[in-house]
Amino acid sequence: MAAARALAVAAPDLLLVFGATPFFESPDLLEALRHAMPDTVVAGCSTAGEIAAREVREGTCAITAVAFGHTTVRAAATPLASMADSRGAGERLARDLPPAGLVAVLVLGTGVRINGSALVRGLQDSLPRGVRISGGLAADGGRFERTWTMGTLGARDDQVVAIGFYGERLAVRQGSFAGWVPFGPARKVTRCVDNILHELDGERALDIYTRYLGDYARDLPASGLLFPFEMVSRNRENRGIFRTILGVNATDGSLILAGEIDPEGYLKLMHSNTERLIDGAESAARAALGEARPAGPSLALLVSCVGRKLVMGNRVEEEVECVADLLGADATIAGFYSNGEIAEGGPPGECRLHNQTMTITLLSER
Image 1 (tube, rainbow, N blue to C red):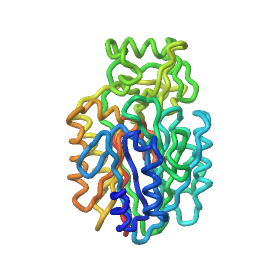
Image 2: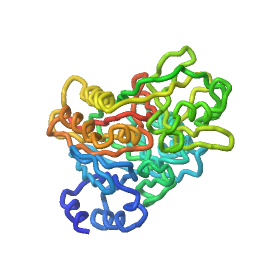
Image 3: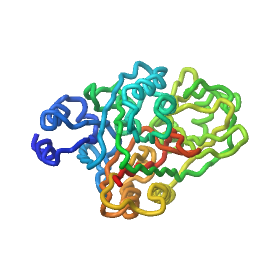
């Protein structure tokens, strides 16, 4: 493969591979990359759209070569046996990354049949204190059928991948913001199990949800991307955490969400428009930048939600362009549209699974 040979000239430490599902269904791409760069860590996943520089693409494969001056990279991967194994998968990944000098971890998980918040919790609880975590869940163009990750076990539909970054000169900044607004009242969670929502206000969750969606209900679960839930605390305080629907069970009337739900809390249905989402992406970029841009080159990893992409339609590139304008010409931008976003949020240092959110991880060396 000519592209692999061209990338090999840069002698990268890391290759990030984000692409449509057909690129992962055959071993050809990974074999070509490993043949050309046997000492390079390769990691990636299938997407609902690829982010490269200022563009959002579909049906392509975007490969970003990253070479560090003072940072080393290690990889880990584990099969995901079932959704109930999500926390265990996070714990196994943490054990497989040597702790000495570990600064940050990028995690890429399958985007279906996973409890993303349990994965994050298992990883964070098992890593050394202070290690920064970010990443996302793979996608398949909004179909929610079969997603792929690429890592040390190959390209698989049941694999969770983690990349560890080591070195005291690595600087890591993060930002995340959504841009959704509520409609309808907050409804009490009256029955749920982990990330399976059974009842709201004593009524089957699917019945309430389809009543709100009206004609959109015919296209569930895909149309659920347009109407996520926001989690509200038991004291009815907004938490800024959103949950996307990954599936529905028409038999028992439950909704399968991308992450866990507070069994004592409330949920609000949300909607948005393009302008609000673009403003949210700008807020995420400003949060990642902090007081000033990094001095010198940086890598900006953008993970945004497939639901945002559907709302924005042919204006989706505007959220990437506004981030690129703020980060400046020295930032190399890569990323993807996902089934779930992983970044810090809430208390300092606490990583969470987000949905319907633009998340930015900015890496640079001091």
